[in-house]
Length: 133
Length: 133
Length: 133
Image 1 (tube, rainbow over the protein chains, first blue to last red):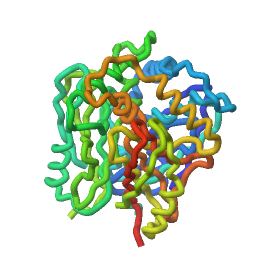
Image 2 (tube, rainbow over the protein chains, first blue to last red; image 1 turned 180 degrees about the vertical axis):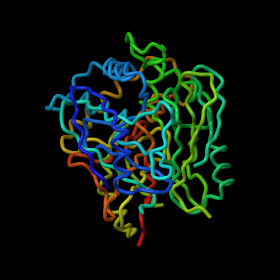
Image 3 (tube, each protein chain N blue to C red; image 1 turned 120 degrees about the horizontal axis):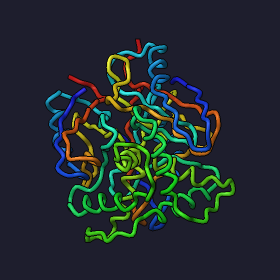
């Protein structure tokens, strides 16, 4: 298992981690075909896959999730239940195709760490289910 | 990795791909027990698992997602940020149990490609993490 | 593939299944590093990962999802389309890191079966993608 550290910059944020994941697979000499599971070991952050071309898409995703938050009186004393709620909808991990040791994504796809209660330093766990040389 | 091509018929659509996935595993002589990751290499489509018996469920899912879309002024010039938003909530892939080389699903479960900005021709990548004969 | 049976207690409910999953991996002598896929073979229940410390978080998640449900006239005659809708947003499964045969989770993470149309008896399928002794 590989651990990456990702710095987020705002309260809600999306950080493109695709290149860092590619490098991590290369550094660990991952080879062969299979999948890699990218897991965020936090409960107020998430991982998602979406468009990597126009940064407006990331803006719109964050704005859209914000606007979907319901007007509920939450009980959790830390006051960040909105972050927990979005984390469980967006998801704690993605399992991504790997071909010849590299991530295999669609043309416009990038992998994003989604910060929902930052800014903070976050970890990302990377677990390949392919042959390791 | 196996690639399937799926034709969608409407702007929002759900296409049951369960049989095509079963055939693909058979054609590729996938054997053994493990999982298969079903991945949509697009950012305005998704993959989900839901009821395959009553077509009203698919109607209700599409109607429900539509009604959940927030009234936000999106920036992305292509005008399909609603599709990107739902794609990241429904999810880009599913990782499904495989037993003796075949998909293992609950009685009422089917696997669906969810079209969010169609109609189009979509691809589906199928990555088994089981023994191949 | 391991099958667990989980009893839920309310119409909407979250049941922490982390310990039962850990025991199941131990009982089956799962060893090595990789992932395990936890799959709910139902279409009105889901699996998620979230905070296991303060039970208020589970309360807030259930209250939040409830409040996000749109006011739509559903067609499905069983009257539980709201449960199908949330199931596809929260997700049918999670694929979790395994290190040395045990679940590897963040400090505050627990794995939850999410009941959306109970109370009922539910099944959970556990598919390790790691070496078995």
